[in-house]
Image (tube, rainbow, N blue to C red; front, side, top):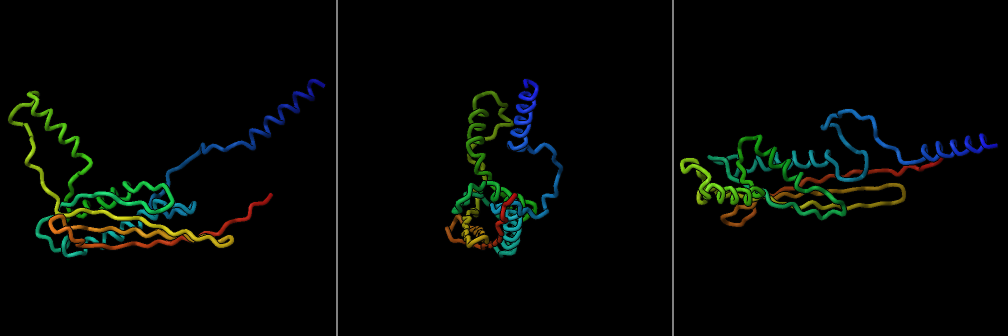
Length: 198
């Protein structure tokens, strides 16, 4: 009787463990260029497609294509107007990297400004040799800023779902505050809900 009780307890424990949450324990590297449609959220494929098209469009604009010297650009913010939590900084970083790879644009690092100011203060503290000191007054001013907005529309009818994204980027002239270039990339993905049965 005692043995049967222990066996029943063991079987219940094994069943409970089998029905519990599964851990991802075996993995492999995947091609980052392969399309990712695992779910209905913003994905790296969406980001890659949108950024590639917008960077190509910006590079063709005369402000960059016909510039005698590479214009100096500063990346600011990308507004997230979707209902998802999306790392918009990653989108802007990818755009900056792709533009820099072209060699036709130079960038100012807005995020490093406080670090630079702190380093100026340190170098002027007496700890750094005079001949290697750097100080305020020598930085380059930006010619343009890049900002933008990410919007989405989600529609569900029965088992069908449509997710639409629109990424808009702007290149604004800092001297005139005029938008020099603006373009958008639209992405729509469709999904069908599966019936779950035993």
